[in-house]
Amino acid sequence: MAIGKASAKAMKSKNSCCILGYSSSSPSPPPSPPRASASAVGPCRRKLRSRPSFAAGVIRRNARCLAALALLYLGGMVMCVGPFSSLVGLLLPPPGSVYRSHEIFHKLWPDIHADNSSAIELETLWTYKRRLKEQRPCLSTIVGQHFGLATGTEANETSGYLIVEANGGLNQQRSAICNAVAVAGILNAILVIPRFEFNGVWRDPSEFGDIYDEDHFIATLNGYVKVIRRLPEEVMERYGHNITNMPNIRVPAWATAKYYRREVFPVMKEQGVIRLAPFANRLSMNVPPHIQLLRCLANFRALRFSSTIAVLADKIVGRMKEKSSRTGGKYVSIHLRFEEDMVAFSCCVYDGGKTEKVELDMIRERGWKGKFKRKDRTIQPGLNRLEGKCPLTPLEKGT
Image (cartoon, rainbow, N blue to C red; front, side, top):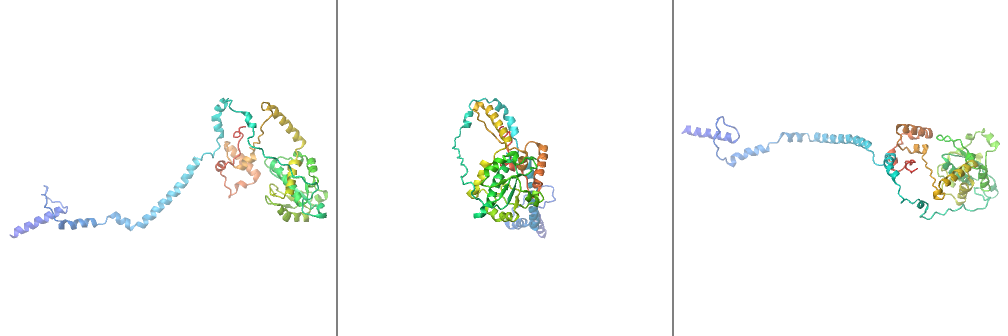
């Protein structure tokens, strides 16, 4: 009876091991165990599910370190992708930022050359669809009218001599001359024939008399502003016959008539002579009507080309009319303005390659003395072209 109980107990223990996954040493497959009750198997399964995994423990213990690593990874990606995207941008410039007009022209030239269509009516070029703006003449005034500051008996007394140095190209010089006449009227000063600043790019030694008719200029302004060719000898002796020794006033751009009366007039009364240099755009467009009259007289009546230039101009105009006989002597005159100083100042890039860059750098340095090499100046040729700041080439203008 005791042996039977022991045998039954051993058999039960063996079945329990099989249920928990411990295989028997018997070579033959064990018989199917009886269906265990929920009370016997349940605790064992619950114990297996509740045991935490190794990976979860590592993540839980090192959460902060992993978050820091993720942030470092993102930062590294940003730092790497930024330069890479910039490199891609350099390799692939945006459309319109590179000069390719010459390539387009060569591509389209066969079509242009083969096009003999009669649909192009040249006569329509001379037909104006809009009403032309009426050109108003200069305001009429009484010759001898006083334009300056003094009143009464002082009106006939001048405050001193005004010397102006006109810089820039021909158009800028013309504008400066007109402004000089107006400023002389504001200050009640005697105007010395304006001097032309020597241009470092063009190196043109021309003076006022080489381009304009001095006699006509002086005679036309007589009664409005007194103009002389050179300073009196006693004034030149006082400054050692050197104009650069005379007091120079740097006037801000677009200065008003009130500024000249307040800042410049007292110095002229004290010194007797002043020099204004540079003088490009040194008078506001908004001035009293009687001052604007002086500017108008200088521009439309007093300034007349010298006889040498006038004769050459008449010859060119006659030749153009003769060559334009098919259009009744009508022709179009275009000032290309594609000049080396303008191209250099624009900081644009064309199709000249390294040679073009070297030449334009030399022109910029010679004309503007390091202005384009300052640390606070950023040169972006592609952006300049996209914004339409590049001078058009003769090819782009169709000439």
